[in-house]
Length: 170
Ligand code: SF4
Image (cartoon, rainbow, N blue to C red):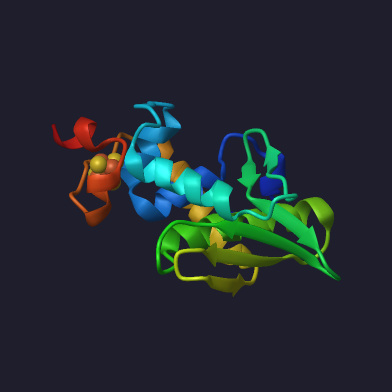
């Protein structure tokens, strides 16, 4: 994948694609087809609740349609990109989504951002640096998955909390 392609100039591959790639390729494929089985899944609701309760009050979500929806950004001598996540330990999907956001903000602003992953359940705040190589590799993998047949589901621990549980395993 050529790094002279600006990811901020494409539309269609979003932060959710990066999250799903690192979670489950079946979910990535289904979600990309906009197959929506609703937001009443309790894990999704808990995530939304934690996000809203812990985000600093005056901070607004930064959304660029078809590209990203960042919990909030701050500037204190340098650009900071903040994501608030459910869970006690950081996971690969958390990292990959934030790396994508860092790449987008770097391309748009021309300055080097720093990422922070917040895990309110354990009061952890983890600093993350931009890693374009990882992001471009993941972008290439995403295109390959969504351009192919739906990957066969594989039972993994997150299936029990996945909105596609019934679709994959009923
Ligand atoms: S139920 Fe499991 S296999 Fe199916 S999309 Fe969700 S995580 Fe993937």
